[in-house]
Structure formats: C-alpha cells, structure tokens
Image 1 (tube, helix red, strand yellow):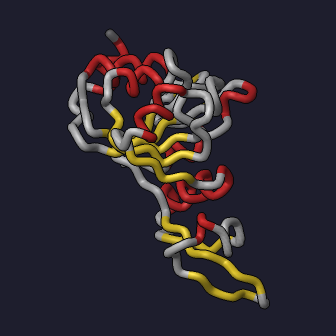
Image 2 (cartoon, rainbow, N blue to C red):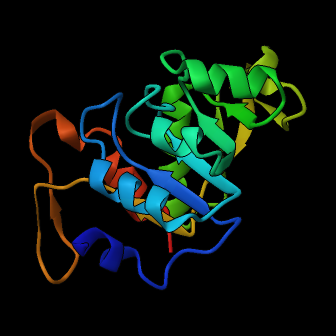
Amino acid sequence: QLYEAALEGLLVDGMTVAVGGFGLCGLPETLIIALRDSGVRDLTVISNNAGVDDWGLGLLLQTRQIARMISSYVGENKEFERQHLSGEINLEFCPQGTLAERMRAGGAGIPAFYTRTGAGTIVGEGKEERLFNGERFIMETALTADLSLVKAWRADDKGNLLYRKTARNFNPVVATCSR
C-alpha cells in the first residue's frame, strides 16, 4: 500500500519510465509491482534489461503494459522475445555504456553527445556522424523520463540516496534522468 501511495498522481498512460537495476540486482521490485497494479498502459520503459519472465519488468510484459523498450539487454525474457518478434512491442537497443551515458546526459541537461561506440555499425545507422582527431563518432541523444523507479538502501528528506553494494548499478543515473 505504501508503494501505491508513492506513485499516486504520477501515472498516466503513454508515459516514459526509467527503471534502475542490473539484471535482478538493485531492482525496484515493489515499485514495479505497484506500477503493474496501477493498470497504466502504453509505457516506454528505459532500463538496462527486460527482467525475466516472472519477475522485474517481466511482470509488466505479462500484462502488456509496455509498448516500447529502450534497453541494452533483453536475453533472459522469453515473453519479451515473443512480443518483440510478433511486433507487439517496439525495441531500441543501445550499447550498455551508451545507455548509461544517455541517461546521465538527460539528468545533466545535456541534449546530446558523441561516442565512438557504434560508429560504423548498425547502432550508428541514421545517426549524425563526425570525425574527431581522425576517428568516427556518432551523436547520441539524451534520455529523459517522466518517472524514475529506483531502489535505494536509505534516503533522506532532501532526496539524497544511499545504495547498498552492487545495487548502486544503474540506479543513480536513472534517479536523475526524470522529472
């Protein structure tokens, strides 16, 4: 009930949600359950991964609440695979470090940046390309969300968060990239 109250008044269909965690470590599992239970639909989800079939973001995939994923890894979720291959869900793959930097840039108010990662590959197709010191770079745009779901060990009333061990992972950049 506490988690439903934490999301009260913040959820609308079609919103973009950034979700922390790495695999199942540092995953805001109770907030994901509250998001599922809210019934909000047509979500764009920015997350390192798509969870597994019956946990994490897999719970939102079961209920068909996710319309689009921006992720670096989706390989452990058969339901995600089925939905993607059948055209039910849109996927934007992003190299893992680039994904983290896109969220960090969004949180810092930086609209775009250049990276060598993906230059000259399918990742760079259709993206602006520039040469710096004779090397090819592609422009990546920042990622921002309407809402961030993070898991922290402790928080204070000013919004400072402490993470426990490896649960830090993507949670700090996720925390900063949303309204």
